[in-house]
Amino acid sequence: MNRIKNLREARDMRQIDLACKLNVSQGTLSNWERNVHDPDSDALILLANIFNTSIDDILGVDAQIKKEPTPREELLLLIDRIPDDKLDKFSSFLQSAIETLLE
Image (cartoon, rainbow, N blue to C red; front, side):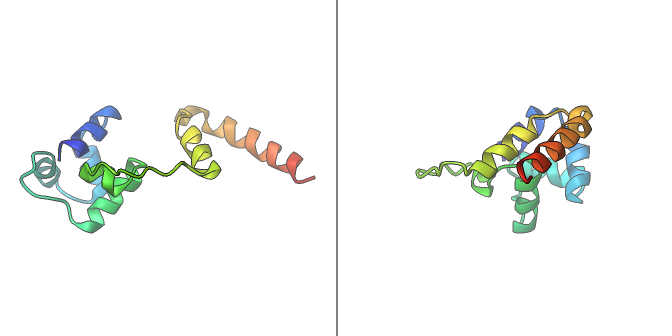
């Protein structure tokens, strides 16, 4: 599944690091990336969560009907773009904004 390799490399992630997150060996991950074997359903769910995408996307299924993201999904996509070293600052800002909105 070259799609797994593409997603991994797009995030500058090493095979061994992704394999650890999936609780599989590096060899197993390599087999998936080279289409020797396919990941099971549990691994597909984990991959979709790790890469913040759908199982269809990981499998390379080109969905003909694409739904528009909900406002919540759009916010999550924006948050995913925030570098880890800026998350604390963003969290404080967001908490303050929420408190102001709820007054």
